Image (cartoon, rainbow over all chains, first blue to last red; front, side, top):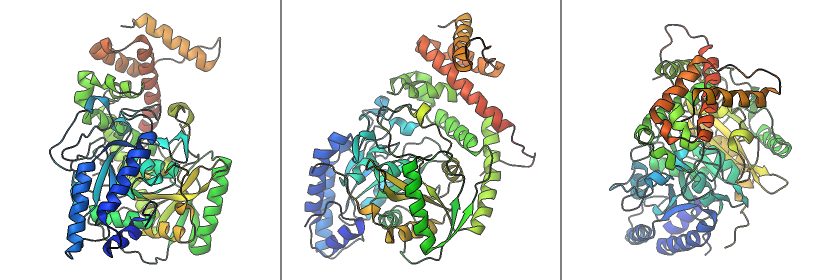
Amino acid sequence: MNVVGMSVRELGEHIRKREISPVEVAQTFLDRSDRIGSKLNAYATLTRERAMNEARLAESEIAAGRYRGPLHGVPYAAKDLLAAKGYPTTWGARPFAKQMFDYDAAVIRSLHEAGAVLIGKAAMIELAGGMGYRYGTASLQGGAKNPWNEACWTCGSSSGSGAIVAAMLAPFAIGTETWGSIVCPSAYCGVSGLRPTYDRVSREGAMALSYSMDKIGPMARTADDCGIVLSAISSFKYARAPHALRIGWVTNAWKDVQPDIQRITSDALNVLRAHAKVEEIALPEGPWEIAAGTTISVEGASAFDSLIESGRVSELIDPAGKLGGYVNSTISGADYVRAQRIRTLLKAKMADMFKQVDVLAAASLPVAATTMETNLETELAFSDPLGGIGNFCGLPAISVPSGFTSKGLPAGIQFVGAANDEDAVLAAANLFQSHTSWHMRQPPVSS
Amino acid sequence: MITRRDFFVTTAVAGVAATGVGQAPPPVPPEALARYEWILRKWGANFTDEQKVDIMRMIMDNERSLVTMRAFPLSNGTEPAK
């Protein structure tokens, strides 16, 4: 049985029925990850010994009738900012290349309890981009290559997680988002990625970048898989059920959209209109992105104050990352508090908006995957009000594949919901995926 | 360490590049200059001249954003988000 490319749900079902052994599954994905992962710079490290121990445990438990649920025996990768006992946790950054923790992050403990099998730590942008970065190569593991075109980047900061899921090196991966770090790699890599509500998933044992904006979430082939994983790592109870949806199509999410993305997004909108109530809606105007950026900058400067004070921040790879922390540490406390007061007003405005619609929808990005050499500060400096607002207010979002450009690169559509309404976000994504098959396409990575 | 004179020269060069030959460079706000000088006083030995120019550019970009944020009207009773 070929398990590569199966959804989490499908693979889990085969394991439950004992049609395939978790040990064989782990071995298959470990070998594939070893062979292809290194070409893509997708992994920080493979956790082979732990994986085989967890797989053997799963096999014996299932054989003994102690089935833990849909993730039992299913392999995954975790972004390398999550502590995993016995393995390096590098945060993607040279100053932490030899860092080890003697405990597992809460998310990894939860997944262990669910019976999932950790096969590796996913590469990432150094410090999740917290000191700023100019190039996709800003990672201890090197720039993560996009499985759809290896000259292109995966986006970040959950760069390895995106590459791993797209290249089918694991059925799912854990990523994190402070602003864009799940949605962007999901769109660039043609996978489904869920950013949960702020505080939905425990951040214990995760690197902190922005204490009030960091979120941990799953990336997988389907939205349905994301719901299954979120249920295992939080108190959220996922039930795939039809949902009468009111969708707000955001008219001011992006200013300049590439023609290919425009065409794809227009087709996606037609799919939604055929199956749900869709109305146009505009995001409120205001300095939301600046306030969100100020929050991340100041909280990041505090989170990494010892790195900045010691000067070791200069060991980062990216030219912008070497300097951003110094600049951010000089933003005033008054400006930080002003940003938080603006956040109060914005949260109220968004709560009002979600009285009109269940979810907001828009293209995940106005561009397809860019090359590794692209200067992100000059060439991807577009405004992202929906990402800024969604992350600043801690709103859940999902990006799912919505089509492919003429150059064969994936594009994504995103759904954003009210705080704690992952149900609506997942329902919208499930609706879209039940009428499209973009999420089933597989990239031309050599096997 | 880049001198104050070097700094103004660098800024002027950057300003001319941005605004066109013959136009005056943009003024450096006192707050931006204070931030820059604070960073250099504390960590100046860490930076090359090229990095010092980059730091000044980052501060200027950041200051422009902060000015926009400060102009947003807030009432006294608007508390920080919890």
